[in-house]
Length: 309
Image: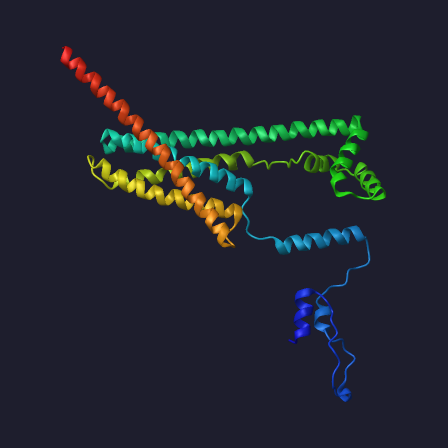
């Protein structure tokens, strides 16, 4: 393919090459880039609006790929962030008691109870979001029926930052006033709310609970590989596992937000990983210190009672 053909392909422009010496005896009446023009289908005669909708659908199908819903990522982040810190802090605190079984039983109890609690919280939160959307939509539909002038004023306020000409603004408002999807437009662009899916509550509950359970299971795994009285060996391995897990989680979470296309963004992601490690370490240290303090006070009280008896 020639240089002109490459430009036409990548920039979607029809460029005519500079004429040069050419043997016109074998000339042809065919266009220079016939294959390029033939690849563009001619739109059929008909309704322009329906053709526009078809083109948008074709573009959407071309761009459609494997994408994870942002809300699922948010729920997984909530579950993992709590699961990687709270159970880790609890197991580190229980390690001060010096018994591996106590750490495992207590960790599993907290892990199951925490996963159920977090899942129920996500479920109730999604249900509240859906109820809020329905109430706002009913209020919007009632306002459209009783006071359409106020709704048109709100729509004009939405387009006000774009400095549209007054004739264009009048055409938009008049067209939207007759549209059966006026309530959808007001909900999306005036109140910035989209209707949650019917399965949103169950998806949120399952995602948060599973993420919490997976994140909280990591600090318990080393205790299964040590003896009953080697609790501090399990604690050291648990700390090593959790430092790596917290850093990877913080790094990945920041990368999903800012990206990783430059050195600055990589540094920000590393800072996010270090920040996550610091937060988890502070929580674990506080829990372990409190358990040691309470066990020390209990031992002191017990010795005093034995001395009096």
